[in-house]
Length: 179
Ligand SMILES: [Ca+2]
Ligand SMILES: [Ca+2]
Image (tube, rainbow, N blue to C red; front, top):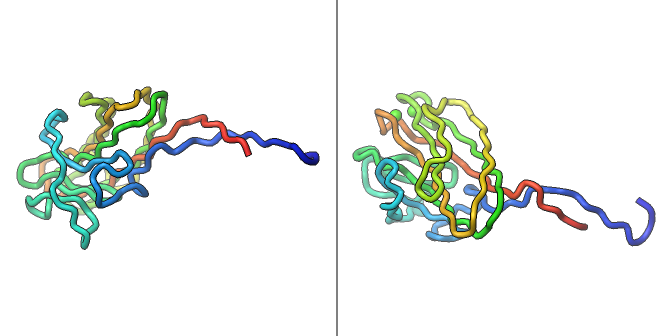
């Protein structure tokens, strides 16, 4: 570019939320909450009670410490089939891209769980019977500040085999940066 005063403009996605890098041992940090509820019963979301530093996960006390959530995914309830729910409360109003990566971490054990996204308690996306290999999906969604997005792991059949990778990256697609 020619000399002084040149201004560069490029468009990049602005990251609003990253379920992996923002995972923490503090409920509510970055707008993320770690909890559970029975199938589609989002109104009865309850926070997972214990952060287990040794395993770096939020967990309850069913078999295998389930339900649990870690930075990369989690496990639904083995005994009562409760969903493992990673919840994000948006500070932003507008259209966002939601990128989702997932696979069955217990690929040699039983089937794969279902993964779902709910907006304010209503399902907006699902992928049933996730495979052993990595799947990438994305969706575009209009949201309003205060909206609640739930990223859930829903056990299928033999819940003890439903350890699941499921991550979410939420971006504003055409943020404009000047530099
Ligand atoms: Ca499995
Ligand atoms: Ca299963």
